Amino acid sequence: MENIFLDFTSESGIFKDKEVLRPAYIPAYLPHRKKQIKNLAGALSAALKGETPPNIFIYGKSGVGKTATVKYVSTELEAICKKIDSKCAIVYINAEIFDTQYRVFAYLARVFNKRVPMIGWPTDMVYSEFKDGVDAEKRCVIIILDEVDKLASKGDEALYNLSKINSELNNARLCIICISNDVTFMELQKPGVRASLSEETILFPPYDAYQLRDILVDRAEKAFNISVLDDEVIPLCVAFAAQEHGDVRKALNLLRVSGEIADLTKSKKVHVEHVRRAREHIDEGRITEVVKTLPLQSKLILNSVIRLNSEGGKTHLFSGEVYNTYQNICDHLGIESLTQRRVTDLISELDILGLIDARVVNRGRYGRTKEISLIVPTEYVQSALTGEYDEALLSIKQKAESSTA
Ligand SMILES: Nc1ncnc2c1ncn2[C@@H]1O[C@H](COP(=O)(O)OP(=O)(O)OP(=O)(O)O)[C@@H](O)[C@H]1O
Ligand SMILES: [Mg+2]
Image 1 (cartoon, rainbow, N blue to C red):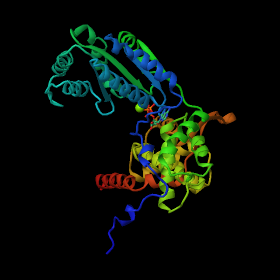
Image 2: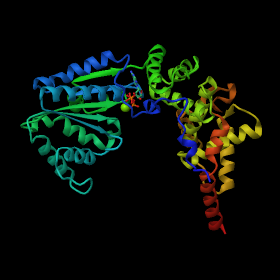
Image 3: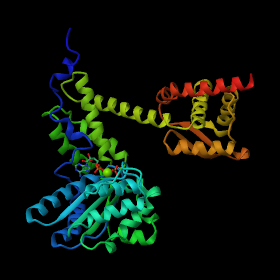
């Protein structure tokens, strides 16, 4: 029998190096980020003179090169420090993973050779170990806190402690770089913390279509074999990403999935058609994910919208109709329905999530109401609503039946 992996061993005719398109790849050249690189390098250069760099707050929307730029600049700084024998330590932490004050300080303490368990100690003890560890030598320590907003609600204390740590150290000097795609993040911090952690701020504005094109062309040259991309492929990826406030991550992802589809279908080139299919594939994945994680009541509302669409053939619905259908479904399932007010709130949430469009319209003597329409393909929503959703409904129904029996 043929080995089941045989199909996967043949070399791709499309890709030269697919890894170049993945988020973890750090490019050594970052077009259109000269100013940000210069500002960041300028601020951190204090470390080379034995001074303490200012704390820096870096902000901008998702996928605009914040992480890539900071990693690039810190690698350069590390290299030069090694060369001139300057004592400087750089630690990168992603707050999505280390999302509590305890976890952040325990991780940092371990980096600085302290034996701290990842759970179980009082937090101030962990903090104090970290401080001792950092302060063991005269040096400059740069701590990069990426996605710092993920730490926010649980991490006020962590940021507060970090913002005043230099006054408690005798040998080492700390510089904190906070990175966030929530542009209001720093404004929401207490004034003392804000002033300390944003001594310097660097904005990463969204890329425009020309800049996106340059970035994609550069990456595509490394990722794809020569002349496998149709001329229209990159402009189409750029157009899609430009709609998403210039998110390069999305554009690279689209380019990679397009190439994968071309590869799978044994095409010799990547065509526009592959990009379209990749886009559908990615969209479906995103929508399914969002719908699956909705609370049950929101799923019921979404189901009401779909039912009215398919049975009544109407695409624009009034909130009253949706509410009536929702109530019928609840009755049928033996689930207590929410008030119209609460359902209106959930409808607004579905609107924010980009699943439906809910706009206020004036209906003359009937007053103002919301007009609701589904703005994503019904099939995507339906496929996510079935499966686990059905099971959840079934178990509720069974429970209701057994309690009335
Ligand atoms: N100027 C650029 N040149 C080359 N690649 C870039 C550039 N800007 C961004 N990228 C690439 O785009 C992707 C997203 O960038 P990055 O991870 O730095 O975004 P981010 O701003 O940190 O986003 P988030 O806020 O979602 O974390 C990465 O693969 C990165 O290499
Ligand atoms: Mg990032």
